[in-house]
Length: 84
Image (cartoon, rainbow, N blue to C red; front, side, top):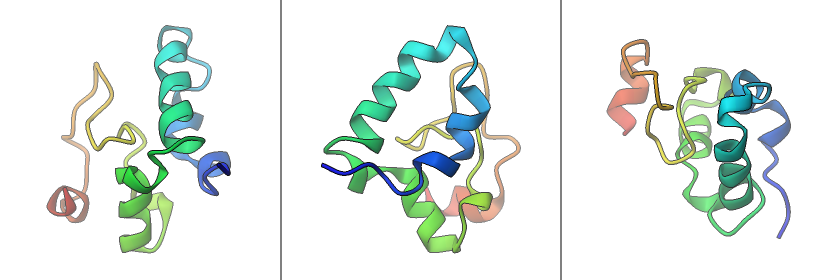
């Protein structure tokens, strides 16, 4: 299976890629959603497609649509929260 075309520019992975405490979780998400069988289930990818750009996807949103542990949805735009 090919790699998701959004992985290189994904603001979620850029934000957390150097956070050692989240390294294992990120590897799991990359394996499942970015390089694996769940690419078509990535909520980040779907929102990016609907809104026309990945810049509208909150950086703390996991590929499954939840907020990263230790963060919340309070800064997510109304457009994004309505799509969930």
